[in-house]
Image (cartoon, rainbow, N blue to C red; front, top):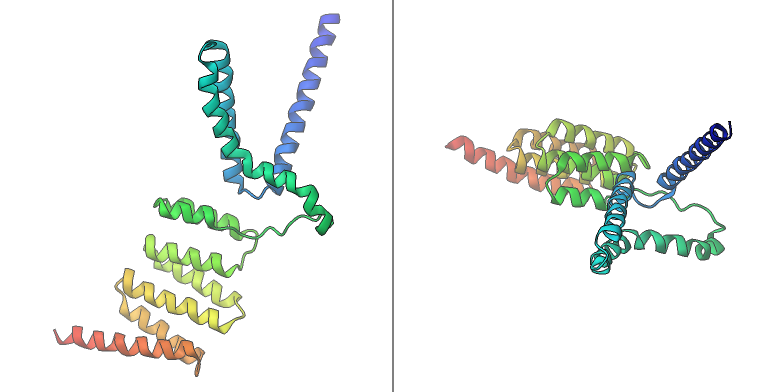
Length: 232
């Protein structure tokens, strides 16, 4: 009986500990400045490094310090930004009353993925950041650029730009997005006719503006190019 009770008590404590870890992980995911994907990657890397340190400490007694030191440095590189955030929080709470900072989208990780030509992952990361602010101008424009310039998916790029125009109150920003889409059509899709329709749309929608003037100049150059092509 005593053995059975001890086993039950151990199992109960283990479940409570696991539940606490799960709750801590959920809280950490919600309040960390890292994206969930990056934070989970840090956890996995820490677990792997911890396992390596444990193995080295028991199997390589003589050279263990030499092998463990680089692993400790790797852990410090992974967690120093988070540690700085935690240490600074009591000080910053004096000024902000302990309020959580605004969860603004950050596209640094998505830009890193784009530089590595991992476009599908970059698109997924942008959508993850847009969940914080669905109509974020920078994020939508970045998303449209990857669809057009890198994936050559102009249907998706056009849909994103239309969404951006519908959600952005600034006419100048609307026109800029349309000008960029026209540029992408010409440069990456070799589709001057779609670009021409966009330029005409800008001229008609934003008359007597700098954007309309730029669109008119681009339209003249595009028409001259089309005439030259037709003569051949």
